[in-house]
Length: 166
Image (cartoon, rainbow, N blue to C red; front, side):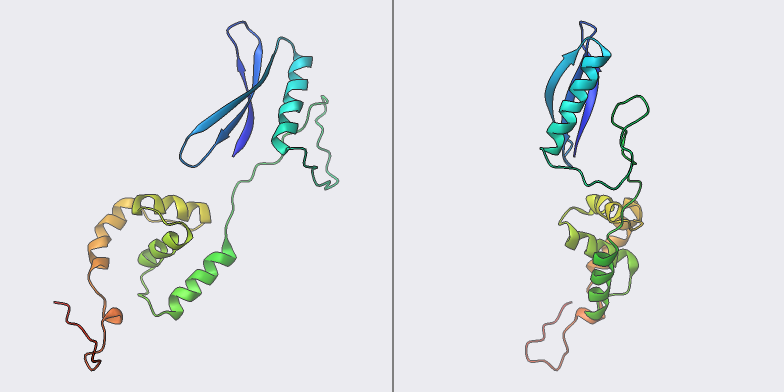
């Protein structure tokens, strides 16, 4: 994710910067310039916005993207996203395979399919997908139950390759 920010410098001017951040929390800051007044600041902000888009034209939706004072208007924030089709397909595949019908276990397994991650970080993955996650403490309490082999995973005793799990 990248965004434009302004900060005050020691000399009293306003610096315009592009901040590139990733999921790991690491940030790279690219300095665009410093402006002592509002006119130059507006020009620097426009240059930073152009640099962010990489010269890619914006799709004209017919909306007025210029504020009353002549500065670029801030786009509407995205308040929620949900990967509904992917999640529904994964849930359907999970049930077709005949895996345990425990919602917490299913969510943990599917979160790790979406993004291979730790148990602790699976809560973040589920929230990014738009699925309500149970608290980490609930997962740690239930993990010993998941470690035991459920009956749907044991092999038939009639099979010549059956193994005993005791």
